[in-house]
Image (cartoon, rainbow, N blue to C red; front, side, top):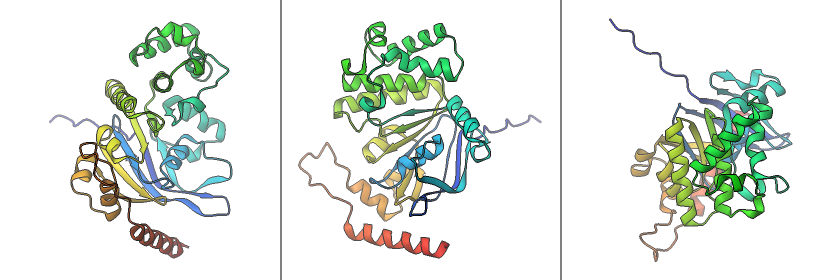
Amino acid sequence: MSRQPTPAAPTLQVEGLSVAVRGGPALLRAVSLTVQPGEVRALVGESGAGKSMIGKAVLGVLPRGIEQTAGSIRLQDTALETLRSAARRQTVAAVASLIPQDPLTALNPSRRIGGQITDRLVRRLGWGAGDAQRRALELLDRVSIRDPERVMAAYPHELSGGMRQRVLIAAAFAPRPSLIVADEPTTALDVTVQKQILTLIRELQAETGTAVLFVTHDMGVVAKISQTVTVLFDGKVMEEAPTAQLLARPSHPYTRALIAATPRYTHPHEPLRPVPDELVARLRQEVAQDDAGSR
């Protein structure tokens, strides 16, 4: 009788994650989610829902004054809470990357593009300078940047917004990470460039098998990029499901409201339908009651 192969461990497993302002209100409330190898999981919700905070907690870059108060984060089966600060940073840097939201502020304006891609490979991951240079040129070419050698020698202000975002995508994929946190990477781009960037991320992800945690407020982006979705409101998970199932048969009223509020480019004259104020008020009341009950 043939032995069944052992299933691969999740790339990322978050269990009961709670994050709060030190001495103040909760920002994440017992969030649990799993990202399997090669999976793209979207985190969706309105501004302030806690989407980016999950990514920051995973990467260990929570803002000053904000702390993890409960739960666990396992990255490639390593419990990050068990590691000291330096070991945690080293572990995360070895297997995870970030594609940030704003390419202009994410890149150092005083440094050339090439060094900003190769630095992590050389200084933090121990690559040789020549290997890092070749990898950077290879990725810049792969993200459809013409004349990669010229771009390597350029400064960020010499590139367009779309080119800067392509540079950040190349930098994120360069170390061959197991996990990428993409924090609304198309928000600052126009619709045409946004579509190109989404296609590029999806193609690179499929080629490399990298798992992606994709933060967005846009259900249209969710439909294009992800296989599974976690819907958040006020730091709490409202619903999660495979993308096709959630878009076709959303079970939570907040999810249905988010889908209804998404503009349809096939209906340009259709009025916008914001999430109803009464629904938001009711959900906030439910969250507050849950908070009170857990004390």
